[in-house]
Length: 339
Length: 98
Image (tube, rainbow over all chains, first blue to last red; front, side, top):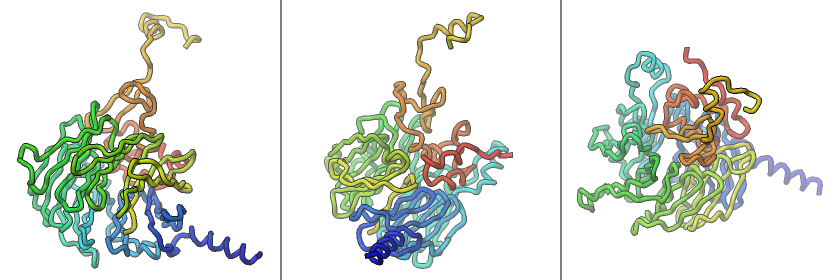
């Protein structure tokens, strides 16, 4: 009996040690300045990857073997089974990431160096450019690299990897680039008094959603990329019915719905009718959302969930919390799901 | 306030003022800001977005040097903060640019 208890304790200990392989089951990877891996079926943290660098974004390879992690000090590749970083691709501060549908291309926003930014500010000169780099994920070699605004905040990639959409909130614009960096188009979506937030691209690449908030309202700019609508209807505005700042947007895996998390609320739109399917208020802020593939449920993260910790919630199609998991000593800001 | 005596016209006006002392406003393309320094909404409602949840968004998208450093000048600012509830003290000091 004693040995059984010892074994149980050991198993429990092993499950939360860094670098220990993850058990089978749907897992969510959540991050602040480190990563915690949550088994959604068991509702438990099953692994941690320490880092001590603020993580801006993560992307899971569709084959499930690797996770690409951008942080204040670089771009890394993590082995999804071994739960450890296997490669540091770049040492530059890296922001948003985007993957092609087959996982063969990864786009990364590398921000300009701190010293050059400070020098430009002291000299009252324009900020130096950042760089958008496209990597071949087979060997993490660069396939293209081109300058972008220092204030670029988000990037999404078309499913075939041939288009890159770069959000520059300070200019109220999304720049459409070819894979070689050629600027194909500038989509002007907002005035100076409007804040644009993280984008979402429909799985078929036909619709780009760019959230916006100003003092009076929050809405989604829905851009027709497939040219199925007339030119004057190319960008439609879907109102959220509030003026709360939007944190995250995500499409269902089949493109049928769009989830939008904003201050203390979540709205789900039907992508066909463009009407809200559900609107749910919460006592906390969910700052990122990831729909569960093949399900009408989604996973959301909140930096302040309970008194001392953040947490994640699995919500159903109406936004009702089905399961909640408190994360020990963590304020999660980003969530990705293992395929 | 009752222990402080107003000795000129301006001070008397301030003492007699009935307007609420919490005001919210927004930068043009940035996060909401707060006067006198705590979280309020545009309608003076309190705490619409707890700073602990909103901090990285401000840091990432704004140049708000008075209250939150920007991520271009201070990319490491959040590195020691895994849990804003318990590690917030590490965020209180913004290094001098020199």
